[in-house]
Length: 178
Image (tube, rainbow, N blue to C red; front, side, top):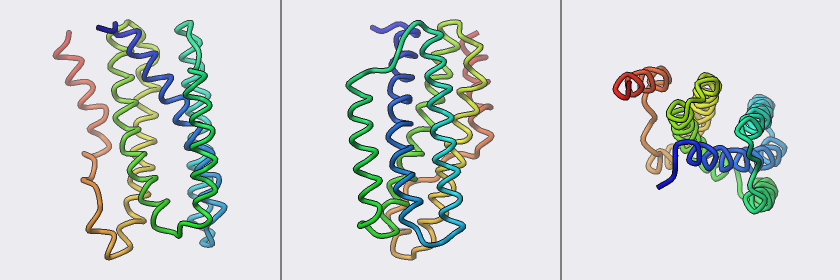
């Protein structure tokens, strides 16, 4: 069974590479759009993903670890491919896929915060929870865009709990462990 530190490193390596894939995918996504407001919002989301990547990289270094080479190569291929596909797949598919992925990212950063607390890296917790909140904002944006299409509403995923639940659930869980 993995220790909390090993689990934290694993989640951070996954997140680090995931942010790379997301950054390249969003670059292709916003460049494929014609609506200037959507272009700008997704361009800002891309910037936030690259910022998260830098933060996660610093955490990995602080743990004496580094990114997974195989995950990095896979993320590069996936991100670039998705970015290109945005130019041919239409509007809905990239919006839908981005929302689903961002939903997963919220939980990934919440899990990382829990592992950080368990292995004594409380200095990572606030940053990880903030990243979870930013990913929550991304998911909410993409969900709101998908909801614009009447037929797509049938395929919507369950909404996330309120944004405030990220910190309140973490505090509750931390109190139970203490």
